[in-house]
Image (cartoon, rainbow, N blue to C red; front, side, top):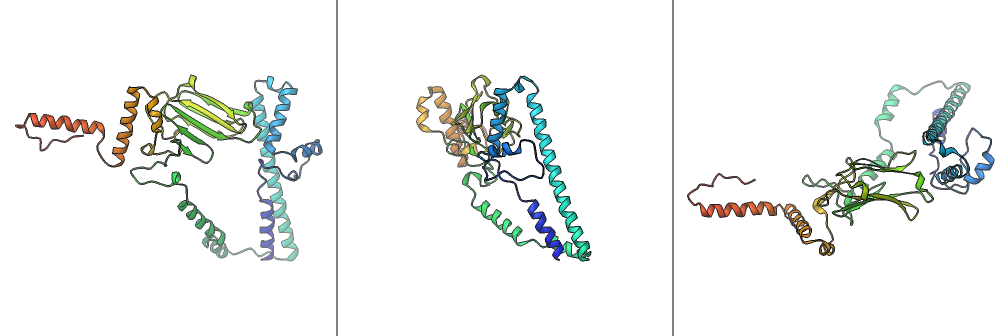
Length: 330
């Protein structure tokens, strides 16, 4: 009916997503509420992304006020942001109520008080729309065309295929590794300052991201790290780079923190050119690991298993009187 159609159109207008705060817009987003400094602040906001604008305001307060002398400054700023989000949600709710009231008034005026029947509602819920079908088809296509390191593997190897750095390229961060180190890189908005970063490296856990926002990475490490030898810094003004030194430098990590997507260590490919830089004992250990990985991938016994078979074979030759037909080698 016409009234229902009008309601859907008006709701769509209300639910249009807000512009990306990272992208500067031609004009600030209009709001029903106003503040005493709107005219001045709108001119500044027009020329830069919202988060950079906020970053500059915080930097201004740091330099020109005693705000950060207060130990509870972080919490107070977070409370202000939470209050603003709550206010924004309430404002959107009031707008939606106004739209519904407008539609109700229009229905009464036109005398169209008939509501859609229960059966018609069930039909609409049961029959998928053309747009939903297209989304499902697109999802299937995207899955089929996913990068190699994101495709599901067989039951023997559920991990992702490692990237060129023996780590993974994930949605919010990238990581690489050697036997001794792990490097994590997280993209940042241009202009983010060091004091806006929240990065806490502990022996068995990591928290990394921006202050006042959900962490990009948070959780227990795959394995312990050497805290004193692990550091972070902002690289090229737009990347948070975290360098972690492994405590056990004879193993490959499947992920940075537990619960994140894992790679297959069977497909890790260390650079052979760097083996010559290792001391003889370490090089022998690395080469043994590489050999065992290749053997396992082909379904063949590892070097330790081969050594056990050789010892048993010699023992059997030395004791022909013994029956080894039922012997099992693990």
